Length: 356
Image (tube, rainbow, N blue to C red; front, side, top):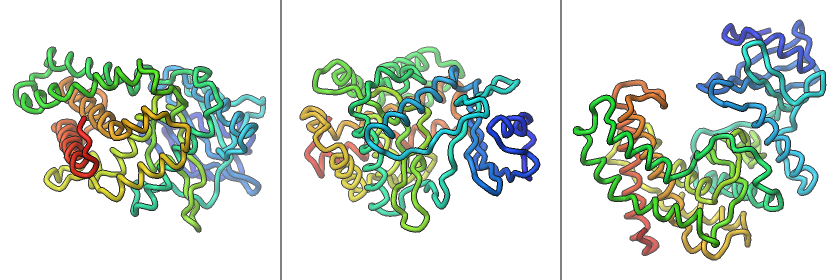
């Protein structure tokens, strides 16, 4: 049996979910900044056991409740596959340990993997189709029935306000040396105006969105490399189509990831961009409105701009949100995203005659 010392309640939790601790194998899957995840197995079955950090998620039980509502709806109405929740021996969907952490479990899906990045355009197409298909299958589900896990998560007006406040406050004295970048971001605030048009305009629908639409949140079959299902629905809540589509463009159409400092080589990969857009349109079929399709090229601009603002805000505030490995990393991340944003603007003008 393997265990990890940082989760002192692990053995108790395993018993709560019905496993004898004397005869299990425990394999850490991920011990990230937020949640800790383990594969727990005996000679009969395996589960994915996960600790939701109550210090990060104010209401972790609402995450569990949201997932169960989505899982139940998809299973009943559409026969859509998601990992099945595993209940405790007391028939509860989750368990709170002595430290206040909320634990949940799923049936472990064998012979699958989650890639970090798309290697080919086919990977990007499959990922985009997966998230679009997820939203389409939930078209009959009332998004208002889901709890808001992170308020104002993809609220661009709110993120811009945070940015301007950080510029004004200049808590750690960094404003003057990045004045040029700040000025560029302020000049691009017309994207905030378009965001307001989305949330107030009748041509844009509020839907169930994943809100963390990255290829690393999709299970692929080890043998066929076909999509099995999306995972990590912790931030799934009501939202607008730009959240998922835009984040896929940001994370999959770019030539380099957000931590890259190879600024001169950053660009939009045309074939990946086209694959992402085509797959999303194909998956959602006639679910998108005419207005949404007309403005589909705004989606990447909105999400890249938002992420640039968030990195720059954290840098101006003294690096209090994102983990950094060196002092200027958040500024480098912001520069990375700003260059990507400018690259996307140029790409859209050249290839689609589209200018925001």
